[in-house]
Structures are given as structure tokens and as C-alpha cells.
Image (cartoon, rainbow, N blue to C red; front, side, top):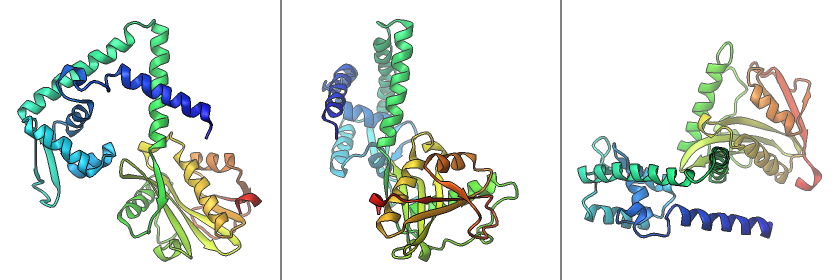
Length: 298
């Protein structure tokens, strides 16, 4: 990693943490540190499961428990079993907690305004635009891509969303039973593999491979949630599938796609895929693509 880039990131982190008051044990003058205030805000007016809070904030279970106990002692939060599923623990704000959350919102608005107030209109536009870029890039950096069994809940969710989206976008709908199959057994080693992307613990994308030894590998089940689009996740999944295909002996990767998926077609072309003659009888395909993997990747 470039040492100059690392140093700049660290300098940025120091400026931001000081400017937003993260170093102060009494964040926004409310008598509690930033971690507790952020947790109070994330619990929200409707309450949240402890599991979802842990995933959202990427906190260690023990540390999250300590934060919740502190807020409970302050009379701001109560925790207990969810009425719909008693196996799930839910955190809810008390009336005092709701009042402090409202105060937290107001003071956070005041802090944001104080960051903008000394600047000219042009500087404000630049700062807000830069913050939007940083937010998007940090979100992209928070996405985790890892192999998953196709029968896992996250993988099932992704494939279900993939099928639903194709059904809504294809002119005549999409029936998986008519398509060339990619069954669970096809997407497990050594026959293949599946990747699932998660953000804050929630599945937001997937991609899969069907392997055929040194013969061309097939890329299947490429999908990215609408909430995660614009983060470069489709390209990241595609690149990782290519890398793993090469590692497992494939010299060429292939895929087919429907003419309505214009953004996918653009992605494949920009990633070096060449359109070729149809190599299978996929009834929903209009375009067939192929890419020779670099020798160093193999």
C-alpha cells in the first residue's frame, strides 16, 4: 500500500474526529461519549434488534453490551425479547431516551451548520460534494465479499432477488425452470463456487461460477442490490470470480445475458469481454460473452 496515501487517510481521520467532537467524552454536550450517542440514535423511535445494531455498527458483542448497559443505567434504553420472536433481543428507547434522541438530532444539525457556516457558498458545495464521495467510497470499502454455500440464507436471499428482478425486467418474465440450471450442487466446490457480498451484515450482491476443469468456466447469478449500486460492486464481484476461476485452472470465462440488462452488458464490455457466437441454448439470452484470463492470473 502506498505510504503517502495511508498517511493522508490518517491525517483526514484526525481532522474529522477532532472537528466532529469524537474526542470529547461529552459529545454535543449531552454528557455521554460519541459511541453511546450514536447507539441511542441508531436504536431509533421504533427500536432495533441487538443483532441488527451489532451488524450495522460493526461492534464487538461485548462492547455493544457495555454500551447498552450504560444507556439502561441512565434510564434511556430498555432491552427485552421481541414479541414476535422471543429468541430475538430488542433495544427500545424510553421516554427519556426519545427526548434525548430529539435533542441529539437538534444539536447534530447545529454542529453540521457550524461546519458550513464559515465557508463561502462555493466552498460549501465543494465540501458537501466531497463528503458525498467519501461516504460512497467508505461504504464501498465496507462491503465484504466471501464464498458462501448456495443453501445459506444469505445466498438464498440473493438468488431470490436475482430471479425476482429478472422476472420484472425481462419482456416475457423469467422462469428459472426454463433457464439453463445452476443448481446448488453446480455451485459448490469442486463443481463451482458462489460469492456473496454483504454490507453491515446484510446480503447486497452475489455471483457464481460453474467450473469445467481447463475448459471455459461459466459466470452465473450476477446480481447487486439496488441499494448497493454505484459502489463498483458488480465489477468487484466479476473481478473476484475471474481471479478464482483462474486459480482453479480455467483459462477462459464465459457468460450470457439478456438485452434488457444494459448496465450488465456495459460492465462486461468495459471489463474486457468480447461478444461471441452463442455457445449454449439459454432461452433468455441475446448476448454471449467470453474473456481470456491473463496468464499471470492463472
